[in-house]
Length: 492
RNA sequence: GUCCCCAUCGUCUAGUCUGGUCCAGGACACCGGCCUUUCACGCCGGCAGCACCGGUUCAAAUCCGGUUGGGGACGCCA
Image (cartoon, rainbow, N blue to C red; front, top):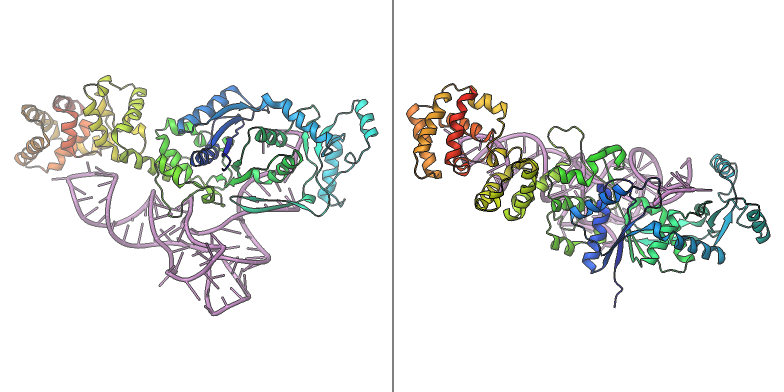
């Protein structure tokens, strides 16, 4: 019987969920799903100064939106501070850790010397080897101290095998006796994190590569605490096109998960895109259903090289990574219409043009319309902007096609009402019939059909591009088309 | 500065462990064409990459060494 996989996502609540955090959460979630394990959500809020209520909610909302579910938590690190302190005491008692009375000034000075090469050893042994009496004396005098872990001296090293990066070795001499408890008694991240992972019985630590350098220290803590060491899998980082680590500070909203929600992404499309940023299958497959992804996922598929989130600020054509956009467009036109309909509904509601009939007597029409226009949209919000004229009678007309397709042809001022009359007279408002009427009319007037067709498209949809004109006419409907054509005279 | 990690088209990547089937495959983007009296979808085609140097080998994108480049970590932050 194999032990149950237990993984965790442990964000510090210092802002919204960004794509780096989302990616970490996704890989953890995927492993739990695949192995029938548990995902624990733990909020590492011990940095009280930077942690906020709002960001905790923001992170949870972000996770929920992309569809990540967790089995335990959220737990809060601050609730376990006593446990962390108890662990430190245990390490003190066993002699694995010691109290250090050095002041910051002393240490700064020391570090400078090391940098300048004025002293041979990186270690600062003054307190490490202090006698019990001296420790007691200093303590009685009220001299503040931190607790440091004793790193073995000599030739050895910490070795572990990272699932992604392979064997990692760190020499003891390259690790200083690191602080695990501050002079004010508060435990530090390295300690808290390990203690929490032990308590939560975490079997796999999956986190960003920026945690790689910390791992040897944490392994020493596991050993000193007599706890089993989990498996580690560090994931490559996400960089911007300038190869700088993605951060809230530098990139703002562009890297926030909620930004993609607000800009019309389907959450699954976004997750699918993110999962491919640094992970792949040997057949380079790109599109996965949830079940397929869980089936295909494996930590070994994580790439060691960092990847770039290709977002160009102020790009007129792509507001975010073109690949993300194209994946979203793919899902927009491939998913069953019924599945995207609710998403389109939200977007129309937000635009104030949602009609309850669209999910009642007009549901058939609504689905047909969404299906008709979706192949040229990239994001959901396009339905409310580019597609507004299908759902609302109050829509703008794009000035470019207005000029090119309407105003340039003065004859249209006469032809639009004429077309309206002819279309109104039809008893069967079908694709065949509308096409016959328009073509006959063009022939009689001895003009190219394109003139009248493009004119009508512009006036009826407000757009230069769109579905075939006869699809448009039959979809928008006889009465509305006739009305729009008659009103078009005002445009001249 | 010290330690660690990484390196295939502009971007995401397959191939690297187990050298030959790779004068390197797919996707996005870009460019052409077909379809279409619009645009998109779809289809067809094109552009474009093994960072560099040396070694091992009959044979190297794949193994080894170095160089360069990039990233990360070096806090009484998480």
